[in-house]
Length: 207
Image 1: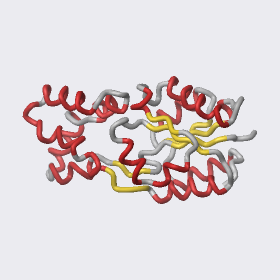
Image 2: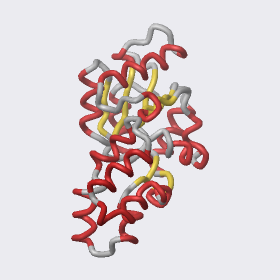
Image 3: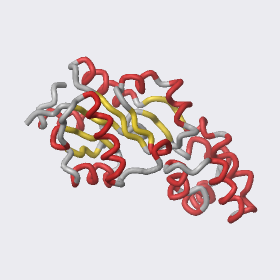
């Protein structure tokens, strides 16, 4: 078995993004903060913007539903950069080693098209990837099989004839890793760099 390319998710693998970083400042009480993030600015809402809805439209819809929380809702994208703490060094080191070994690298991320440029401009690791598919740009999100098909199309530009069984996909979201596996890829659930490295070695990936 030969692995011809490795595809990385970004958030939680390479980039340290967490809503808590901002909202701990805005809502100091943990119980109140948890309620807000579970019921108002919840991940299902974030995913709408990751899927292509504009942040302006998403914000307006949520403010209409929860006008009493307007200031906190508007802070989400107005101060979105405060949710990004930086890179995750272990994940970046994994990219470095694979790159040094000559493994073709690609990126597949659920990310708003409006906020992704912030990360692109600041984190050099993102420039190590030959192609990046951003959900907000293509209007479809993981774990939808369509976004994996779009990724494979981009990979084939560099590796003509590559098959799903020759691709590894690394994601900290188990459902996304399982979706890749269901499509014939080698989905790796990222729980840490050491565990992921072990799984890559088992696939005979040079690292």
